[in-house]
Image (cartoon, rainbow, N blue to C red; front, side, top):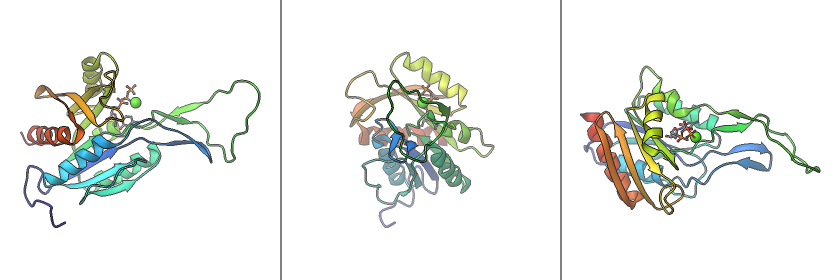
Length: 223
Ligand code: CTP
Ligand code: CA
């Protein structure tokens, strides 16, 4: 790629990023999903490329253009996102950033035909999806692994707990109870936890935030 810097803090590194929602089918015409826009992951992919990295962006269905110079792999379900991510990490990966809003559960069965309406209430049986972030963090050849945590309360406690449970190097926590910030928004404010301690970024535009976050991540992983 012509405009790719040859050096930069992530020069020669392979960065893998998950972004956007997943979509879990119920029947041929219906699915379960969430409001993730993918903006934070796409902005981080762009920032990583500008920092000199080769970037693989594993993306759920979003309305965003792929940043120039970034290799995007489109997926739909959590299981597809896990296999595409594992394949990308198999190529050798220095940094993995999980920004995707992965569906925690999927319908236990996908109906082959459209489910018909009947009288009364219905209930849906769901099974857990694989945890992509925890799976990558558990590899013996694990990259520097960064998770995101969107929380509506007790942000710091839940974020630190997720970092420990999933064995992450760093977690980026955002308080999605503040309206207009985080989920499905252009603005974000986050607190980052790692072995280096605690750091706050924003509130700012997701693109500016991504550049600052990527700079902080690359300094921490190179430290
Ligand atoms: N994540 C993932 N695969 C999953 C679920 C989550 O890779 N199946 C990643 C997300 O991309 C994010 C981090 O894990 O980086 C935290 O996601 P979050 O939904 O906040 O955490 P959960 O462990 O699912 O806990 P909960 O939804 O109960 O808060
Ligand atoms: Ca979850």
